[in-house]
Length: 360
Image (cartoon, rainbow, N blue to C red):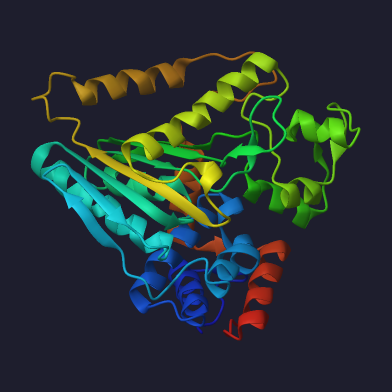
């Protein structure tokens, strides 16, 4: 591997090369490893640490080594028309299957105004926004939906019902970074729990389902060990802490399952095991209606409202969604990624445990 540059700043291509080599060490093909490395590094440099380097050893590699991701299987297209495709992923690597699926949607959107690709029997794919942003690079709106194995408990429920279902929508902007929404529809993600475990922190008890707190006699206003929550996969829905808010949050997460299960032919969250997922990738040409929606003018008006919007003391100024991550990514692509002691340890541990050299 190449040497670390500029006093603990690593160029992005070196990081991608390292992650690619790590994946190749567990028999991921070169092309698939390149895609997965790009997704993982993109998560890290955009500040989405819950899906970056910290998850390689405890999550991404075990999915492969435990044969949850079945590398020998090749996805197949089971239905296709000018707008819609259905892909049976056959538990292949979620990163590359998803990358190819969004490319199908992009191609159809360029030709017909819209493309929709449903992916069934897939596996974890990293950050949802990576794929929606693929569309914006082609001046298209990108939408990504994914479910996963159960980890979110319905309000008052005794067991997990939904995955930490994710949605990302990205809108292109003329000569500017895209507007990007990317969120999991649970009180927090399993990846964030893992980061808190790594830091040795406690987390708010109301992140756990009410039934879990009641069973263990834990006050919702206290804090708990994130290890317990991570191992038991008993997260509260988005909006936890308020019963009406919980029901709304649960229904938002349920929407993803409805689209995937009823339209996409995929499994509902409660029918899946760890690491499994189903996805939908949508690309839309904002100008397909001959400019009727005045897309560019509308997004400029929205941006102006964000810039001029006033907030009370104690709150951050309202930002265009994705602005902070876009800025972090731009800086990293120009200067490289700064390595703190935490990240140095993560990369060093990956190197030691996989036998892939990395020089600091």
